Amino acid sequence: MIRINLAPPETRRSRPVFNLSLPPLNLGVVFAIVYALTLAALGLTWWSLNAEETRTAADVDRLTRELQSLKATLGDGANVKGRLAEVKRRVDILQDLTKGQGRPIAILDAFADTVPRDLWITTLEQKESVLKLSGTAFSTTAVSDFMSNLKASGKFKDVDIVVSRQAIDKTPSLVTFEVTCKFEI
Image (cartoon, rainbow, N blue to C red; front, side, top):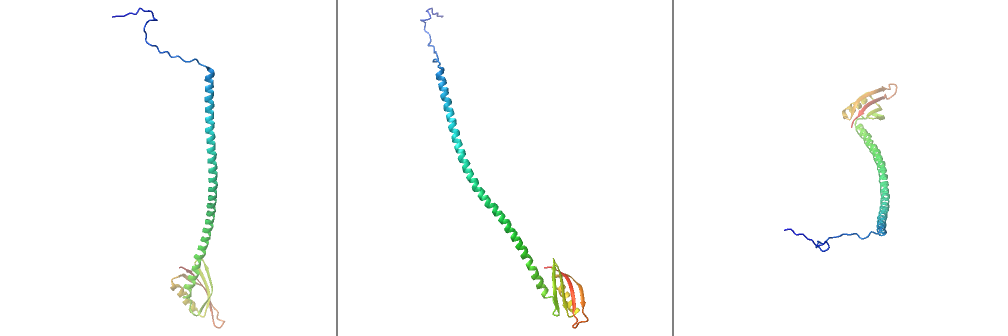
């Protein structure tokens, strides 16, 4: 079944139509709103940048104070390093001095037991580990005993006689000699 509505259009029943219409546009109001929003955005930006500048300045001041205190601490540390180098140098000098002190005592201690009664040492020179001994004795036998005693001690090596002279024209007849050897501790 087909229905046809022949009624005029004004009287026809129709569905309600949603009609959306915009209010009339006033450009002055629009520009005022845009201007206000721009001013608000610029104010907010200025306020945040000013707050950030204040924070940054406070951080710079704090870090500058911290840097000054660290420089003072570092200056003390550098000074300590300089003093430490000086102390190490002094300790090395003292060690060198004390290291060489025991050797002459050891030489004389080992040497005292090897000298016979009728022999006198007049000169004792040391250059590195070589000893040069000069002296006088009543006989060549005393010089020979002295050299044998040096070898037998075990602390003197390479014992050699350099010079041995006997003065015949003097009374008593004395023998002058010179012996070289190496001292080993």
